[in-house]
Structures are given as C-alpha cells and as structure tokens.
Amino acid sequence: MLQKYAKDLKKEFAGYNAKGLLSDVMAGLTVAAVALPLALAFGVSSGASAASGLLTAIVAGAIIALLGGAFYQISGPTGAMAAILTSVVAQYGLNGVFQATFLAGVLLVIAGLFKLGRLTAFIPMPVITGFTSGIAVIIALGQVDNFFGVTSIEGSAIQKVGGYFTHGFDPNWTTVAIGIFVVLFMVFFPKKWNSVVPASLVAIILTTAASMVLKLPVNTVGEIPSSLMLPQRLDLLSLDLNTLSGLLAPAISIAALGMVESLLCGASASRMTGVKLDNDRELLAQGIGNILTPLFGGIPATAAIARTSVAVKSGARTRLTGVFHALFLLISMLVLGPVMGQIPLCALAGVLMVTAWRMNEWKTIRYIFSKKFKGAILKFLVTMAATILFDLTVAILLGIVVSLVLLAVRQSELQVNYEDVLPHRLAAPDALLAHRAENARVVYITGSILFSNTQMIEEIGQQVNGFSSVIFSMRGVSYMDISGAQAFLDLLRQVQNRQAQVFLCGVSPSVRQMMDRSGITQQAGEKAFYWSVEQALTQDEPTPAPYLQTAAKN
Image (cartoon, rainbow, N blue to C red):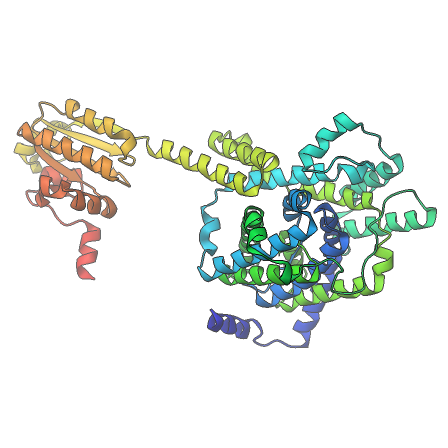
C-alpha cells in the first residue's frame, strides 16, 4: 500500500509547476469559502459547537487530503454526520462524541487494512437515497430551535419536535425573519454568481453585519478560539474499556457513515476526473483523520461531495488543494474569529435548511417513483423511516435486509415452458435423428433453481410423462443451489426410470460445476450434455461447448 501511495504521488505531481500550484491555491480558496459556513453550521447542528466544526474542517481536511485515496477528496464535518451526533451528544455528552470519533477512526483503519473498501458496492442505490433523505429530515428538524428561536427538550430531533406540543411553541420573529431571509437568498441567488462566491457565505455576511449594526436580539455562535487546541477535547488518559464498549454502537454508526459517504464521494468525483479512488487507502486516511481530530476538540469528518465537486470544478490539480483549503480556514479562524462569533444561529439554521433540502437526491427519487419501481420505493421508504426513527446502522441494515428479501423473491421466480418437437415444422427435418425427435418434448427453464422453487422442478415430471425423449434447454438457468440440484437429480431419475432419454442443453459453467458436484452429471452421463437443442436433435455425439473448448486450449 505504501509503494502504491508513493507511485500515485509521483504520478500526481509529475510536471507540477508554479501554474499548477496557483491552480491548487485558487481551488483551495474557493473550497474554503464554501466550507466555512458549512463547517460552522454542522458544528452547531451536531450538538457540539461552531468552533468544533471549523476545527474539524481544518485538522481533518489537511490530514485526510495528504493521505487520501485520490487528489480530489475534501473532508470535513458533514450534515449526515451531524445528524448522527445529535443523539450521541444527548446521551453521552461531548466527551462521548470525542471517544466515539476516536473509536470510529480505529474501526476505519481496520477496515482499510482488511481491504473492506468494496463493501459499499453491496448497498443498493434506493437504500443510499433513503438514508440520505432521512438524514436531510433529521437535519431540518434539528434546526427548528435555532430557526425559530425557541428552546425544546433534550433528545433526538423527533423528541424535540414532540416537545413543542407539550411545552409550547413561542417563536422569536426576528430570528424567524433572518432565517427566512437566508433561505430565500440562497434559493434565488443567481447560479452564475454562486460559482464565484457561495450564496451561503454572502447570506451569513449580510445577516451578521445587520445583527451587529442593529444589535438584534438573536442568539449567536459565541466565542471562536484562536488556537487549534480547543479547551474541551479528548484526553487519551480518560479512555477505558468500559466506556469504549458502551460507545461501540455509535462508533460503528459513525464509521459506517464515514465509509459510505467518503467512498460514494470518491465514486462521484472519479467519474468527473477520470482518476480512480483507492478505496482502502481512503479508509485508512479517514481513520487516521478521525483518530487525531478529537485530540484537538473536533468532531467526526468524512469526505464531502459538495466541497469535493467544488474543488474539481475549480481546477484542483493535486491533494494540496485540500491542504490549502484547511490553511485558509485556519487563517479565517485566527483573523476573523471575533466576527464569526457574532454570526446569528438562525442564519446558520437557514443555511442548513436549504442544505437539507438539496441533500435529497431528487432526480433519483423522481425516477423510482415516476417509473413505479415498487421494490425500490419500498427500500427507499423503509430506509428513510428507519434513519429518522432509529439510526444509520439500523437503517442500512434494514434496507439491505429488505433488498435481500426482494432479491430472493425475484430470484425464486422460475419459468418453465414446454414445446413438443414436430419434425415436419422444422427447417431441415432430414437432419433430425428419428429416435430422438419422435415423441420428444423440450423443457425450457429460465431463472435460478433454488430451494424456494423445487416444487416447480418436481412438477416437470408430470408434464413430460409419456415422452421418449426429454430435452432440457437450460441456457436461461444462471444458478443452482444444493436444494435445487437435489430436486433436479430426483427429476432425472424419475424420467430415466420411465425409459426416456434425457438431454441437457446450454448449461452454463457455474451450473455445470454444481451438476458435477451433486451427482447430476454422473446420473445423466457426459453424452447427455449438448450446447443447444438443435445439436441434441441432430448429432449423435455432443460437440464441447465453446467455453469448454476455450478452457481446453488454455
């Protein structure tokens, strides 16, 4: 892995010059402008602080960029991670978040070392879309307090909303006005201007200036420290096995989300750049970043699709873009800290409301609903509901379980069709072998022969009773399990006991392997296997299938 990393670095920086450096600096500056309001907002929405979010973008952004699986990955706090952290903060406090982040980092390092980067490929698209929409709902619900200037009970986003019905709801209309202004400003901000300066940054600058000048009665971000080491941070000496074991579940959720978000971000960016992400090295980088970030007082970080796409579109050439982005955020913290402390929380809430809306993969959602893909709709709704009601780990597991059940149901659909051989209707009746073609029936089987459809295999015996030749066309059979093989073996014995000839045509290599292992080949005989039905009706001896000929040559 180290050798490949060195090789990738050499390729990445080949021909690097002052022009490339300037391109990385400008891309880093652009990404920092996008990341600044989001880092502050996600820090607040996580239940930690704006300072924690900003510091996470600085520390994790630089470390992960240097060690990551490709040059384009930009990491930091994200909305999805913030949605998970609210419940962790409510249950374990901020110190629990630090410890869970540290443990999640260790899990990500282990995942990288064991090359588990391909696991996300087994998560269906509707499941990913569902948990993204569920997280968007959690983010939006979690910002109701700041957006309306109210205070609710502690707990998850759902519990907070439920608290409004029992404890009352009395909005601060000044706060509401600022939040609505930010939302409308971001929605109607011209796209061509947004490519130069982010609408969220402009909205926060305007509302902060108005709040400071007019001395508006709204809650603000609070003190932004001028040091990379926050007063409240992870103390390694405080770690103990009992505490870590209790935090294992949230740590798994954090690690799972970090893996999914980072690798999906890399997959998206690789399509934009043509540069493939090294999944396992990315997991290692994410793990190391999340191990070190809580030591400074930061929260979990993942690669962010929004910031990564901005980096690519802004002309990023190397991983130094991520380092420069972190450097510019650090300068902003040191120079503009007092001003950032005056940012109204309702303005950040407005930014997050719009972000939550835009997080939804609306194109995909419209597609699966408009085309009425019932299975995809079910997976989407189950995962979204589970994300809102439970947590990410449960949501993804439920989504995958539903997907597997639906897949098993579909795989169990076996089609069996029958056709009698009528020599006079064939193109070349003279070429037919009379002793096979007369009183012969072809059985066309399509689908996988599994434990769940063995009854259909058993019923074939009744449909071919009385025929002297039974030809099984199995080109459409892609898989056969042991239960299906046993049922098919019993069928062959039943047919052969009636003194009928049996022929097996178009058997795929994987199905043939199962037949060899299960005794079907021995029962039918090698001469029963033909490449096609036509061959079985016209040739005394079978010609080896094309794939068998290729194997023999090799």
